[in-house]
Each structure stands twice: as C-alpha cells, then as structure tokens.
Length: 342
Image (cartoon, rainbow, N blue to C red; front, side, top):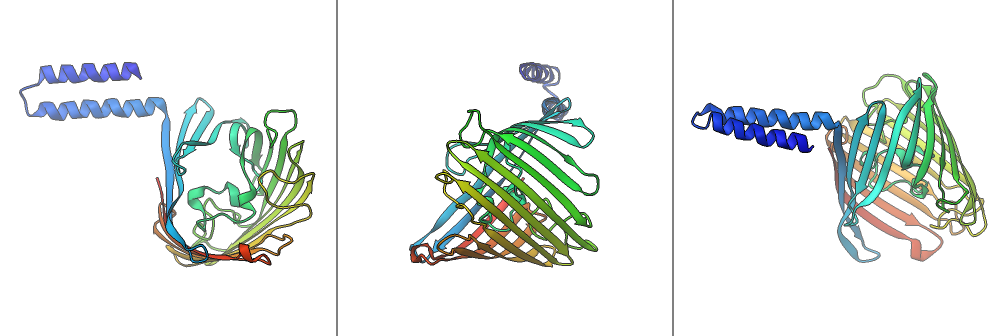
C-alpha cells in the first residue's frame, strides 16, 4: 500500500512538472491517478458490499412509535490464492458488532471447508441474507439461531441437493464441549425452492414447479446448555406462488436455553405463503406457532415493492399480531421500512 501511495505521489509530481502549462496536463494527470487507483483495488482483491434496513415501528398497545435500524451491514471479501475470506460487521446498535469472520477453500470437487465465525447451518430461514428477507423480522424458529466459531465442511450432491456438517464452540465457549450441526437439502423438483432471496422473487417467470426439502440436526451437551433439535423445512415455487414450512422439535435437558426460547418437547412451526402480483410487487403471510404452554402464535402480513430488483432497493409494509393466553404478550405492531443493498 505504501509503495502504491509513493508511486501516486511521484506520478503526480512528474505530471505536474512536465506539463504544467498545457490544458491536456490535467487530463493526463486524471488518467494516471485513475489507473493507479484501479491498480490498488485490483492488487488487493478486496470487494465491499452490504445492506441497510430502517423502518418506522408503531405499537398502539405500548403507545410507542419511532424509527429503528434493522441492519447497517458492511461486508469485506477477499481472495488469496484458493482461499476466500469474509469479514462483516453491523453498526445498527451504534457500535461495531462482528458478524462473519471466516476463511473458506475447496478441498475437493464440490467440497468446501470453512473455519472462523459463521452462521450455524441449521435453517434456511436464518442463513438467507438479512437484506434478502421476505419480512422485516425473521421467523420465530430463525430467531433462535446464532453465529458461532468453529469448523464446517459442506458440499453438493450433484443435481440432487447440498449437505453441511459443522462443529462449533457452543454455549460454553472454548471448553471441551461443542455444538454439532448436520444438514441435508434435497431439490426434489426443478432447481429447488430455497432461493438466494426469501420468497418468490427468484422464481417469478420460471417455468415448471420447483421444490426442496431439508432435514437438519443440532446437538449441544454441556453444563450451560443441553439439548438436541430436529429441523424440517420444505419449500415450493410454482407460477407466482411460493410457500415454505419450517418446524423444529426440541429435546431440552437441564435449565433450558441461556437466551430463552423453546422448552423440552416444544416444536415451533412456521408456515409462509407469498404471491408475486408482478415482478416487483409481492404480498406474503406467515403464521408462527410457538407451541409453548401459553399457546403463543404470531401472524405477520407483509407487502414488498422491489423498486430495483431483486432486493437492491425494497420497500416493505408489515403488520404483526401476537396472540397468547397471557394477555401481556398480546400486541399488534406495524412496520414500514426500506432495505438498500449494495
């Protein structure tokens, strides 16, 4: 970097001295600076991307209303030989929070190894990018998932699907017990229905029927958390419709999860339906049944306008209603927001 900056300074000085009195000197200088800047970017091999989500939230039950930041994400990617690096941070809280920090490389045909901090490969609803969500909030099952530090091997099954196995630190950190995840996805029809973007936007105008099913298993056995969970997902896309079902069956021992959430024997389930009116307008309905002792469920109705496809600029209107046997949990919330990806 110092060499590039030194070269830029020398080129600037030489250009100014040699052609200081000609109109073309500034054009030549601009070109030299442009070329040097391009070389800096190309030599480093670093790409910057990210997404920004903000929304207005109104809740009459709590008599609150105001603007919130959902995501302020910056992603940095680089490639060194056969190794791909990703580091991402989120600034929505007002301070930088590390999200992803990993290295990935291919060890065989269609087999990759990942080390560092990354999302546990358990649910599609969590692993889909935050800027590519169908609703402003993730599903109830997806909100139980986390990033963790560890090791993952994943690959493809030809035209059939994909698989992933991960061993990560778990709730007890760097002690001797770990969190293990295994996931298999089968694309049973067409090219599958777990798209890069949640909902039907990736499949609008596609011919035929696309369908996928996935089975995932997660396990953690330590002094902090002790549980096993089985996840089942299925998605289908046909014509203008997209639908997905996700269910996670929990077997929890001891005191339960440190961050709260499902208890032993609970199997929260979500059902999502989406319809594309045209390529840039989508409406959706999601029902989340938390399967808890107070019979809590969440209904979310949403509408998206993709001003620039597929999710480069997206405007969203969501209505969320929580129903429960516990009156204090019942609430209605309206969110109006926008997402910009770059």
